[in-house]
Length: 484
Image (cartoon, rainbow, N blue to C red; front, side, top):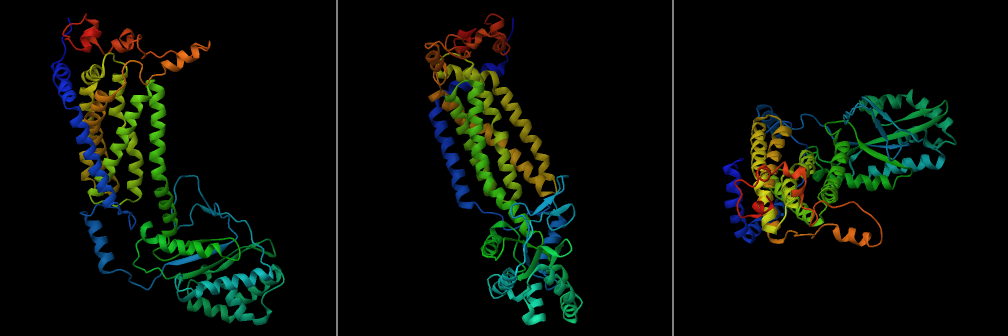
């Protein structure tokens, strides 16, 4: 005769009745906890002002980097530089190699995608005017420091500019490159040749033209989206008014990667919210399809949402700003937080009896496994706090708090909700829909969890009920005993 484990008996006879007695108190406490974390999230939320550090603050290398940046920043006079290019594909100006590695600021494994540009007389004058407008805009350009090839060509040739066609323009540019004026420009500005120029097309045409500017962005400005966004928006406005379709990008100096990373971060920040919402919606449909009960699926999705809020609130309460790494982990939180809730609702749906009896059986059958899973997961996250790299340290933080909040809210919010408001009988199932279609002669799949078809009659559920298979040994006057 099978003897139940003491832990199972204690869960069924002690913990479950206690949770039922204080079910409304547990719900209230959980709501208060979620509200507190939501308040912390709203009050402490802050977008990262800089790129994530490689090492944790206590690491010697990070300490050295911080001292270098704080005490010895800008050893030479460098500036944020922005280049504006005409003749690139606006949707995808750069194609990266297929190895999956993107190195912003590097031309390795990248290819420019040209769409071409027709440099007519009017457009030549308009491009010169674009450069003058940017030069005179103190919000964009510092001290009128610009690199504009056509403007310098016009100053060199005088009234001969503009030219009737690209062939004559290229001939004039070739003469300009061999002139003393161009030699002086490259001597006075060592990187002049790389800051403005053109790409030829065939023997006579020009398919790409670019200019550069020393921007008004302060050198000590951090590279995070929260800081760069106003400057980026100013250049977006300028690009929208250019004489020809153009794109702007940072080039040169220590800020060479800023614009590329900014676009990545900006898109990531925009998508993280929609990712969370779409994941919750998908979870609801998947749970409804697998449990055949939309009622409990709503409770699970509500619990997951509360877990995400609490983890998010814990992140900002810990002092983290929301940057690249945090956005990645927040999107992963849903997948880590759904586990315990799904197990509890699975056993609830496949049990019979009243709300309390079904929740009681779910607790007695799976709570030990949930406790073990939560404990091992949280303990496994602890070694990550000893990692030197910020990415791994933050990973341990998210694993620990996601698993912790998932365990707490699955038991203190989801189970009391099931005890107080969970479905009974056919509530939340699709049996009424099947009956409606059956009355019209349409056969649909049967719902094994519907009333009258309790899963205690299935071999799958009996695998979890050794006491029932043994003839009810060790059972009590609970729903489990009745089922046995």
